Image 1 (cartoon, rainbow, N blue to C red):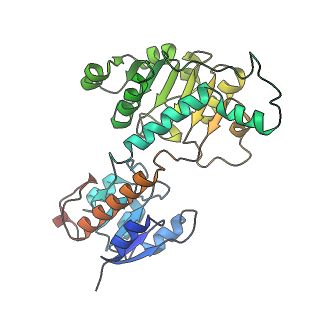
Image 2: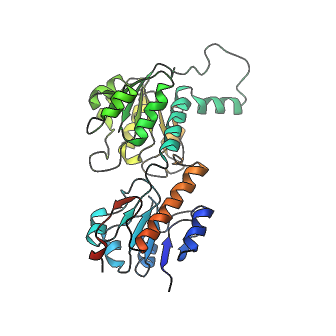
Image 3: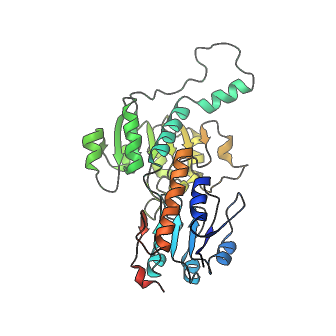
Length: 327
């Protein structure tokens, strides 16, 4: 009898063909995520689970999934999964690191450019028929070349953004929970305190994982430290930024611009005030949304799942317990 797997959203065609050739997979058919109740209904009998960041995989769900042999997340982050509960249950958890680094770094640079040159406002300006002639002082933006780029979180994506920043002759500074020597030697990045970074950077780009230490990391006090023309870019997790504090900072001119690919809540309600602010750009969590990156992470998620079902080490594991401990 083939393995049974529940997949909380459709994958790419190539990944689904590979998965269907190995097991009996059920795909959630809706555009929106399955509810927690649906997850509780589907997971007790399946052998494998393929999930996304939008799915809450908590201790209760893990403990009632008695047949579950592997959880495979189609993302780098795994903050939606109770990793400790999975480890205690002997269930390996896969994720998809490295494959979306370049795509996400590219988007971070795109958001920096869009905010600095006020592209959203410019597009609206032309679409509304307000473009009458060339003017010397219309829609003036900020220089990107030669700016000071402050990176919070100098992991794979942070380093990739820093590397791109060098192409714009940016001065790179970074804050991380520990120093990253290769970023200093290879990228010329200067290690500074969080306060120094916020005070000195023209552009602050967030690349930290979501955990207890980073949740709400950028709040009222931190925003108050930033330059009045500074740009805040978030391609990490929405909860890293206090949304209410950000709205107030943008409204008051405390900072210049925010460019967000992730928000809190996510998605933002259509009537949220951030959408109305001219100095805010919001994209719908498309950091990894290139055809190549999304296909690659889907394939790696399937490879993680198959390895877990066969009792082999996962190619990319966030949790890899001793399989013998799982009943």
